[in-house]
Length: 306
Image 1 (cartoon, rainbow, N blue to C red):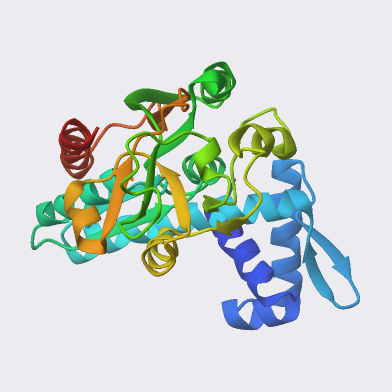
Image 2: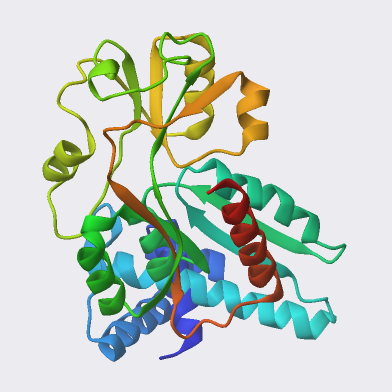
């Protein structure tokens, strides 16, 4: 496969037209059309549908262009590095569940970033996106969270996708709520006590091979009649602080964060369900110094909080 042809295809996809792409690339339109056909023949796929309105990507074409853009970006980095004598940029990227003990570890980890050029990506998301970011995007690490009873589903899926995994923590969810909540000072909290409160939940649970409806039914108590579904972590604290009728199930939180936001953390005597946070990466990927430093901070935070 010709890398130049790959570059041509990416430009045609961006321009949506052979004519426009040919002008941008300073080559004749017939030559560009021939190169695209040769590329399709080499790959054995159709990258573009030729329509009256322009060049439209096929499903195979969308997948190819996605990978081609990453390859061309890496080639540019290599050329820039060696032709200009530029120092190699430090890179760190991870997708994680919405967890305060992990974000606390990340905050301390940022002190490890020295004066060298660096790019750091930290995404809070669900397990499905974290896995996809490693398989199909440039993310190096991920942490996925799931109920322990789903262990076989996740391990089978990770193995099938060539991902290495390591358990970071096992724990039971605790309750967090405002200090002003009616349950904050109750000696013993049960599921029944939560009935009249408003539960805050993250609205994107995921388990491979299981329908979302099944997962939601297992993760959300039927007894709770009022819920707020959020997709980011910052908003949950704002709601918990402002509304003493709200509560949330979470992995244990550092005490300093609870004190800062005027929240309390309590156990529920009826809750026996266990969860796992699992660190994942591609099996062939070798950990960088930044990766190793983050993992150290992660396990240190786990020891303190969990």
